Image 1 (cartoon, rainbow, N blue to C red):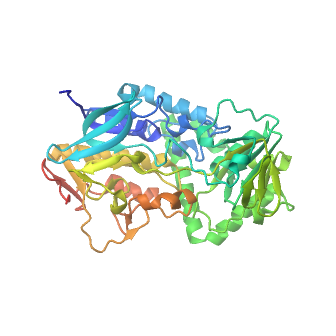
Image 2 (cartoon, helix red, strand yellow):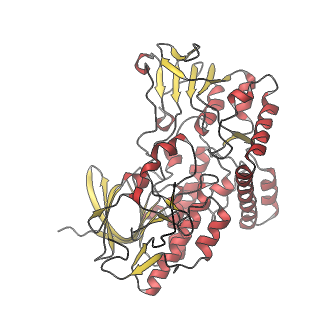
Image 3 (tube, one colour):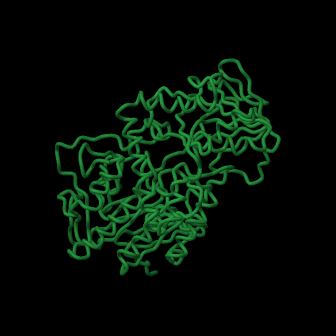
Length: 491
């Protein structure tokens, strides 16, 4: 009988969350045996997967970067290759590559309270392998890496040109001198359009409805000045806090005075595109700011492309694809050689992994999130889910540091099992994420619920989360600790 390799902690995913988690674990829990299982052949996750033109961060790198490694490039809004270089440097400096098992796609995890272990199944080189661990930490993101979301477009098969989705960008796609339609109005579309407009004959952003955009310089002059004057970590900490507080202030203003923020955002777009551009039609959404994520436009690149005439915006509904492009419900026809369906992601909770606890299959849609990272009646499992209104890594760092606190507490108390238990009858269920974006709406039924008060509340507030993760007691009455045997709270 083959012996199953055992680890103290298995981290799933070697993207920005997984690398960060591994670094925090080896710094704060140096005696634990940790492995990262990564389904792909490289680190980076999102930043290794997406290869479309112009791929860049939609948050500044002073907050998207790790709290332990300063971002030292001049550009705060970084392109994909620069982010990959940063992640590679972090992994090499901290010795993380030695902990990664590449080509291990996790498919299932089964918890046994009798042994206080997870048995984790993964596909590797066409075969199933099994490993075990005391604690399972999911850093696999929240979308399906296999395929993006593409609606059913009537007449799609009639189009004689090429149709591509940004999630799987063809390396051989030559769009120089071509007419391109980009379907979508999110961050991906607004990144693609100015990048492709430099070489394409014409790029058209075709959207059903507009998205709010906010422009800022790709280089942060204040940050670059401060980095020249102060030690790296001190300067990085100040810049990180300044940018974080700005994000929180903007989000708070949008929720408190949405009309004011809306007018300010649209006024800035009008200032860029001039009085003759129909901003109300093409850049004024029906929803309030921050009910969906704002799209970042660095150095006004989208507006520059539009003003140059190489990019246009069309707001309409698709009636059908045709041989030469797309016919709209207004009767207008758009011609194209290439159509890019920048129509969003398919969300996938816990990477689609099948989970069982003591032989019982877990339906996570019936669970409540504890501190937004663990789940009611599911022992020794955590999941990184970053901010939707700010940089992902701000939350990922907090969650990984809290996990280290939790593991050290469990070791010191001699309790190998930690199970969130919802015992407060006054807590009512709420949506996991209070966002109206289509990709959230399509998938939220499969996600956990959040509760109406802490520690079951999923905050989108960094300051509140610092209190919740760094200063709140581990022994809070909702997280139950037990010995090997039947985990507390399991039915």
